[in-house]
Every structure is written in C-alpha cells, then in structure tokens.
Image (cartoon, rainbow, N blue to C red; front, side):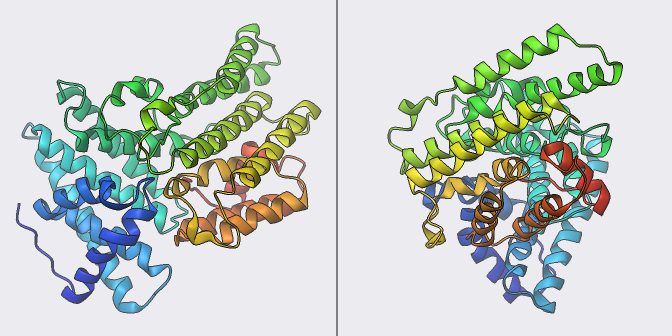
Length: 404
C-alpha cells in the first residue's frame, strides 16, 4: 500500500528519524540494531500508510514532552487522527473480506502503536484500553493464522508486545471497573508458547515466568473480593494464595538462553524487580480492602527493602547518572508504581520519586504516574494504600491510566 503523508514533510521526516532512534530505544528493552521496533515496525510502516501514520504520531507524542510547539503538536495529532480514520475504514472493510496473515499483522501493529501513543502521551482517560481491546482481536487472529510456532520473529514480537501491554494494564484491583477490563486469554498464562522464537524477550526480558502469573494473581484478587463481600472464608482461595506465593518466590530465570545478551545482569535485576512487585501485588490482592492489616504491611515493607537493596547492590540504575540506565528499565514503570503505592516511609517515597523524576525515558506518562503516587501518599484516607488505594485515587481524580 502506498504511503500518503499530508502534513509538513520536514516535521514528518524529523519524527521518523527520531522514531528510528530515541523513541524506539525508549519503549523497548533492546537497544541498537536488534530493536524490533526498528527491524519489525518500521518496515511495516514503509509498506502501509496506517502503520506509518501511527509511527509518526508515536514519535511526535514522545518529542512533544521535551520540545513542545504548535507545529509539532499539529503534525502529531494530525497523524494520530489519520491513523484512527484509517483504522476505522479498515475495520469496515474487513467485515466483508478475510484478511491474510500479513494484513492481520499490519492491523495489530497499528493498534499496538496507538496503545503506545496513549501511554507515552500520558492519556488519563483510558483511551489505551479501547485500543488494547482492538489489538486483542488481531492478536488472537494472528495466533490462529500462524501455523508454526512463530517462525516469523516479527509476528512473535507483535504478540509479545500485546501480551506485555495487556498484563501491565492491571495496576489496580479492578474492583468492578469494566472500562479497565482486558480478558485473560489462555496464551497470556503460558507465554512459553510464543517464546520459542529467538526474538522473544524485548518486553519480558528473562521474566516471562513472572509475567504469566499476573492473570492468576488478578483472578485470585477477584475471587477474594467475592469472599469478603459474602463474609465467608474460602479454603480454595487461601490455598491458591499460598501456592502463588511459592511459585513467585521460587521463580528462577532461564538465564542460559540469555548468555549472549548484552547485559544479562540487567535482565536478571529487572526480573527480580518484577518478582518483588508481583509478590506485593499478590499480597495486596489477597488482603483487598483490608489495607491496614499488619501482616500485609509487614510483607510489603520487607519487599520494598529488598527492592532498594537490589538497586543498591546491582548499581544498574545510577541516580546521579540516569543516562546509563539499561534498556530493559523502560519496562519497569509497572513494578515501581505497584511498590510505590505501598511505600509509607518518607525515605522510600523520596527515593522512588527521585528515580522517576530523573528517568531518561522522556515520556509524559512518567510524570503522570508520579502524580498519582503523590496524591496517594498525601491522601488522609486509611484506604489510600497499595493497588486498592490506587483505584480509589484514580476514581477520586477522574484518572484512568495504564502503566505501560
């Protein structure tokens, strides 16, 4: 399909250059020539105008954070509008025809890029969830059409990217919040099914074993909420909680497959941070609204201490030299927000605030996420704690975000 660009060509070229460089490297856990946003997404963009408009809008949304001006803003949101229009037209057409695998991949790439635009720009009205639901449709279609286990690494990356966004969209307990709900399809709990390809891991690093437990934790939290509403304890829920805690605590990365990675220690550190965050999320999900429970507070405090000890020992995130942060750190907003929501000590809050303020990932979403934490920390409600508190704060301030 011929690419048609109808906005200022100089801005368009500047955006594309930036996408091929800083933007691509700041939204993926791989840098350089192996970055799949460069090797996978850009070739699709050159072949399809819908993907191209999405790429340029994403680049502009990223650039606006640091170099905001009227021309750039106009170009960015014009590309965004053209992408949305193109997507609607394509959705109308596919009701009448059957897409081949390449066309499904293009549609999936476009909708995933729209998700990233909403995330990078810090949209607080839940727009990303609409795009995620559309992405899910194409991800499932691509899984169905792919006969072998993703011989094509490009398609494997698209599925991994969708899985990553769908999983980290769970930052609160989603207590009856339909507008944040993304179904947990089976492959999200068995990420090894897309992990045979050598390209697997740009978003998950070595922690796919941790990521694939997120659906179980969320389902436990939902069942626990039902138990609390009925005031009837459930031995089944209690047992699942114990089993999940053991599974997360005993997780070990398959580091042998990453022996040639540029920085395997960075991947391991990121995996451990996700491990601590998922344990925190598990405890918070189990205790639900009982956020003042002494056992919950103690377990969360211990994990927070482990987090900061890991950062101190690994020295992989230099507070005074943030530009040295490894690429995989771009995926750590979710664990930082989960654990940050459980930080009661001013010292811990200052530390996580400093890490986010000095983040080299120049995206509006980082400052918006920090603002939510600030609201949570100063709120006088005894329920303003953990993921349960995040839900309360988001509702209080009319915010609906995904920490992608």
